[in-house]
Length: 355
Image 1 (cartoon, rainbow, N blue to C red):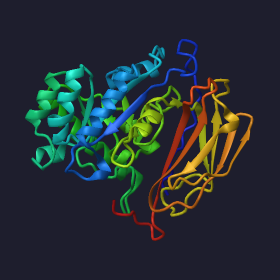
Image 2: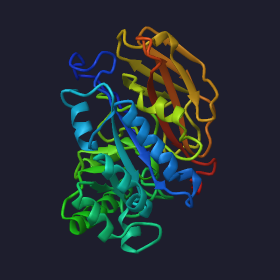
Image 3: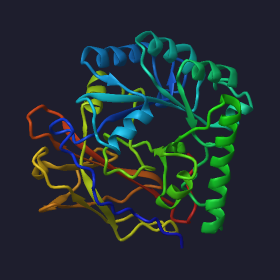
Image 4: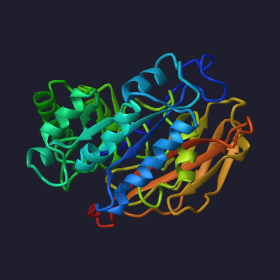
């Protein structure tokens, strides 16, 4: 059986240079389409996108290039109090026609993660390489989103761990080479397709990429592994200004170790019964008021023992399962410290759902 090596991380980054309470964290937002005619689950309308950008400007957010933001988070933590990075997955045409002009008018940087097979095939509604080169010439970061956009974190039927890792390495390597050949710059960042990562794949990602991005809520902080960094997805139903404000004003809950009980097993259909987190002690957030929620929105039973938090998990469903934990900031701002945990679960017969 192939086991997920759940990380245990000791936080070594000094937080004294960061703004009070923010501890060197920043927020990464994720979009796909900016269009009225594409699937709502992966789209915001141009009108909504305008409102998002207006909010960031009116509330004095700094908009930074993604790699710069991550370097500061994992370096000195010398960040503005309000800072975001804007990302787009899949390289859809509406990023070129709708998002780019709006961001260019404000002088704001952004990143596009490209799944290269779709671009090579000329599929609609993806950008062409010519359009991606236009963006790159204007300073837009063009980065890796795999070649196939497959569920890379999921092993295939009968696939050994060695074969799985080889398949993933070949997929990421192909996309890396295509982007370098077409854009003239090798990608240094990776976004996991569907936001699904596995600890066993981090070493493979690190061969060509400095950081890798997932797709689960929460601000990015120095305690996150470099190849499992959270982003807030924004799409219809989760794109009003209240949701945006909650996301961009959030801070990274300092979880310095996590473990599931029993440990996650890629070969089993059962989900873990409990999640255990160790929190970095501090007075910037109200640990006694931590609340954790299942993806359904139902509040989960939690117990706090000094710096250790135990969360009783609900039975999951086949596919992606997530838990979000939040704690109010102690400064009375109304902001929240945020942490998200994700696991993948097979069907009872060992197969994966089609998503």
